[in-house]
Length: 444
Image (cartoon, rainbow, N blue to C red; front, side, top):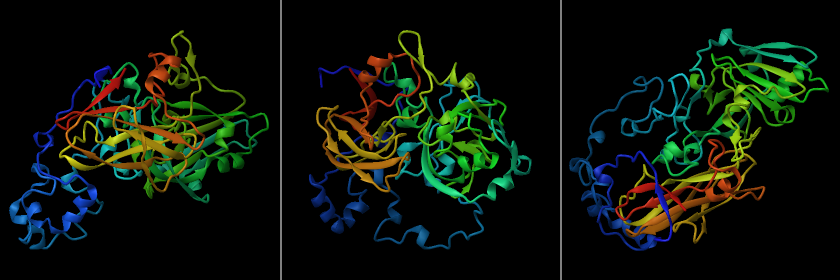
C-alpha cells in the first residue's frame, strides 16, 4: 500500500476507548465459530464470544442469574402513547455540521445510515434540508393550486387530495450535494456526514398525473413549475414528461402522515432525481411551455466545470453505494468473522450488482443484495469476511440495471474538475487501521 497516496478526512471522530481492537481469541472460520456458539455460555458470562468490553454487562444480569427485567412488571401500554426508541439507542440521531450552512433557517442534517439495517429509513431519522426554515402548515388552511397552460385552473384542499385513490411506493431521496465536500479530497471523517443526505421511505399519495388530468393539460405544455409554501418560496422546473411518468403528490411516509420537516401536509416526490426538486409544503404547480430558470436551477444546483461553464438540468442521481460498517463511526472491535454492510441506489432504476474490495480496488467480490431490490430505492448489501488486525482499504462499486457502473473519483474529476459540489457518486474508500479505527481516505 506504500505506492498509494492517502488523504485522510479532517474532523476526526472521537472513538470510545472500548472501540479499540480487543484481543479475545476467536476461531478462524465462521463455520467453526457458529458451531462452537452452542457451548459458549461461560464465554458469554466472561464478556462475550468476541472478547473485550464491547459485550460486557452487569454480571448479575448474565446467565445463570435471573436478570432484573425478568423480576419486575414492566410499563403498560399507556406509558408511551407514541412509541419512541429504547433509551439504549438514544445515540442514533440526525446530526449537523455547524459550519456547513450559514444560518439555522438554511440548514441540513444527516441520516445516521451507519445505524441502519435494511433499506427503510425511520421517519424520525430522515435527513432534513431547509432553505427558509421548517414551515408549520395547518391542514385546514392548506391549498394546492394548478394553473398555467391548463383547461381548468384548480385549487385542491387537503381533503380533496385525500379523496383520490392512493398509490404507495418505496423511493430514495438524495440531496444533490450528498458527498459534495469530498470533491477536493477526504474531508469529513464519518459516513453519516459524507453520505447521510439520503433516506428511503414508503410514500403514499396521488400520482401527479392524476391531478394534472383533472386540470386538463394543453397540448403546448412541456414543463411544470413546482412551488413550495415555505418562506424560501422554493421553485423548480420539471419536464412534463417526468411529471406524467412517476411523480407523486404525497401525504404519508412509512404509513403515517408526513413529518413537518418533510413537508407536511403535502409534498412532491420526483423519484430518482435530486432532492431539491422534491418540493415540500407544495403550494402551486404551474404548467408552461418552457423552463423558468429560477434561482435554484441557475445559481444553485448546477455543476461548475473547469472552463467556467456549468452543466444545467443534471437531475438524475446516478448509481452510487457506500459501506456503512465498518466505517469511521463503526470501528472494528474484535478480530475474526465480520459482516460488512452497505447501501446502494440508482436514479435510473434497480441495483443489479454491488462489488466489494478489501484492498483498495485491486480485487473485487460480489456482495449479497438483500431483497426486495426495488427501482429508485435503497438496496441493502452485505459481505462476510475475516479480519485479523491487518490494514484494509474498503470500497464498494454499484451497478444498475442500465449497465451503469459507479466510477472512481479520478474519472469524475477528469471530466468535471474539482469545482462542483453536486452529483459526486464516486467510489468511497475507508482505511481500516491495525487497531480497528476506520478513517476516510482518498487513494491517489
